[in-house]
Length: 412
Figure 1 (cartoon, rainbow, N blue to C red):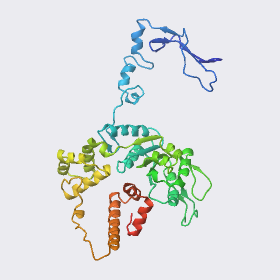
Figure 2 (cartoon, helix red, strand yellow; figure 1 turned 180 degrees about the vertical axis):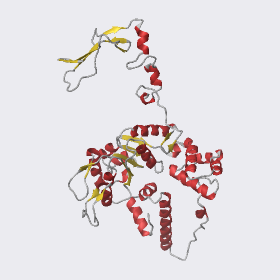
Figure 3 (cartoon, one colour; figure 1 turned 45 degrees about the vertical axis):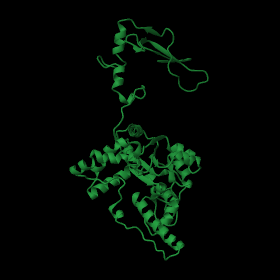
């Protein structure tokens, strides 16, 4: 190849067999720059007279011999059938994955999510996992990390809804000694600790507004600034975020920055709810029971067709997490409980008596206090003590839920 005033010319050596392109022998081609273009050449364009048609003897050989192929090697068309990594680019259907990490599925919707996770694991782009509470976003994030080139580096989890804004900033970015009251020593933040690995920002939709521009800077420049210092330092971290909220609606409502949303949603992966993939319940139930240490007899009992059919008819608002809790209850009580069955302790509680000697207002106040206590206690138990998830599931403000916890002396 040599450079010319009008571009670059490439010529094949006469002594070599030559290269065949679309059934013709390629001898030489010239790449010409277009008017007004800058930098680099456009794809090579074959000039008239630069190619020769194949004769009858050369055509079969050109079909068999591909550039760089050894004699007897399969043709390109044959290789396309056995190269699934190029199937999507060639317009062919890709094989669906039945598992990804600890996640299993038979449904098309879940397998499509697995395919996107596999693609995300092959790069370091920022990932946004979206789905209802209990759909397995944490497990998906860990599976992406373990399938990536950063698998041997740290994987750190930060729940953005579990801490107030001032503590969350220190948790993410660290602080210097004396940066605020109680900062008695220098502390590394999660971004520094995860350097070279992955940081999982759970419940990113709960991120306080004052921290959103600071996270945006980290995603744009890959550098952080500790509290109490004016210097920035680079970090090499892969970010995976997750939320149960519709961040597009949050952006429209002005509660979430649009620029931060677009920085997070480089690779958006929706996780379907369990009611959208009921055909996966038998496979998921078997995996859960095995993880809970079920005996072979228990596996047979709790994977019986009639029991699985009842599980598939349930609504499962808590998704896979709720299914896991139900199967664990079945193992505890040693019987196949219907999905809507309450706990044994709850079923033994007698109905509350009404004290008519009290005034209506006082009786109502006491009943409301009792209801609030029991509801909040059961809500936290259902969501494993995670206040942000509990508040979202109850459709109440997280600050108000904290207020109820303090009022009734409950701990998260």
